[in-house]
Amino acid sequence: MTGNVAERLQAIRGLEPLVESERRSASIKDCKAGGYLKFENETWQIRRLMRYLDVKWSTFKKRKTDYWITELELFGLVTGATRYIEWELDDELEIAVTTDIVELRDINYKGKPVKHQDLEDIAYEEEGEVRLKGVTYSYDEDETWAGLYYPDENGGESLRMRAYEFCGPKDKTFLTIEAWLDEDGERPEREAFVSRPVKRSEIEVLQPGPSGNA
Figure 1 (cartoon, rainbow, N blue to C red):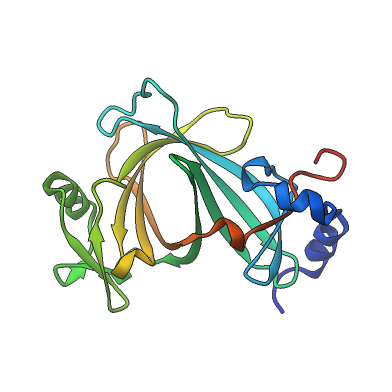
Figure 2 (tube, rainbow, N blue to C red):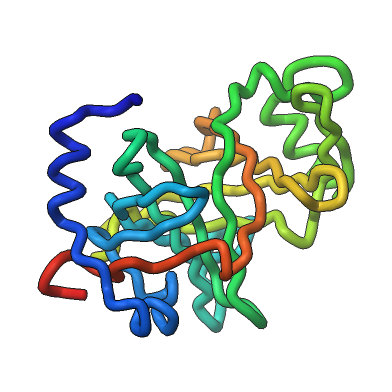
């Protein structure tokens, strides 16, 4: 068992689950920091709620209609693990959970660790493949996007990022490489992760918000 015992005990004390009938109608869309979810045989406390606003790729200017992606940082009450889950509402509710944080040096493009210029070239050509741990991921132009990242649900100052999206075999997993740009836009910091789609039925909302505010 991992994680700080005191942290887990404190998180457990805040859990006041809805009655079963109310859980059936509750949605991840209702969840806030301090709420609780159950999936993958674990109960999770929502530690943070972060949001991304989809914007124009080249200029980072807002679109005519706002389109938001919400990310939840989760803390496991049993294991003490940290996980991330995202949801967005397009034609229907789409949910994905991060399964692995990836070292960039482990992502290969044409036999060498992928560089930022490689990503720029792939985006320009609108095609390309990278490999990670023996798995080939194909560039997905339709899913690649740019966003303004707001680190908490109250808004505040945003950060600029571009997400280069790659699909694994049979679209069962996805590789995302994010480039975070500073003011001059040079030498962006990068991070990467693998995720998988999640069915709504896999997630049970135990408590949408903190005790007394659910």
